[in-house]
Length: 288
Image 1 (tube, rainbow, N blue to C red):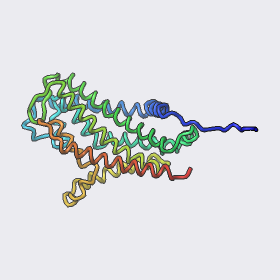
Image 2: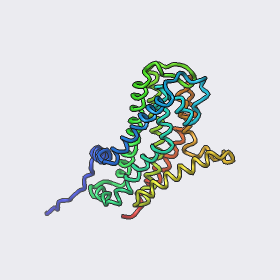
Image 3: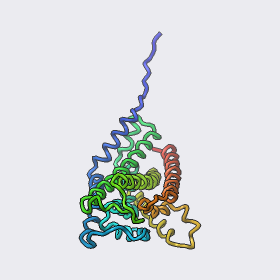
Image 4: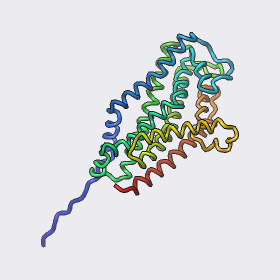
């Protein structure tokens, strides 16, 4: 009795797919340029504040630092405030823009260049493709945040030394305590960017034009900022992603309040889950 050989399509290992995606992301020239520019932001801020304002002392009673401008003022001569201030200022535009760019390149960009179809021929299930792309966007956001935090810490220490680690409450922290606060800031900002990246990825699955993703994400953030400034719409503020972004300044207070930071993490997680669900539904049901 003759038997005919059967062919089975072996799945590409997930680890190899992740390594390939991360290698592709971090070898792109524009990715390296963006990361380099982000890393220069704390350096430029630190040098500018040192030249213009000169060395400063502890903040006055923790009343300042409620917004980006006041936080930058407090960063003059303060090695602890500088990396936090740089991250908070960049969170309003530069970091979401960079994360949206990564989300746009993940699906829409590869569709434009015709490389996404190669993933499906590997063979790779569509759900695994989305998982790999989501991990790639999240890794980019985390690396961008870490680079800014690292350059901010090094710049602050080089310009002001380890004796200038003041909180906004006027207390002085040790170097390990200050680094812990900066690490908390980095993780918190990365979580917010993961939510932005998830939204960008969801939009990216609906179009073949990366520019549409960028415009949609940035337009949404601008709209959220306008709505947040309207007291008449205070009932809507809890639904806006950037409502808790000003709570980042809490990492510079002593004792450390966690209510605003925890609320921000919960809100970002809701956005990430909803956006990822929409992206999954779209990529599993789309034609082609």
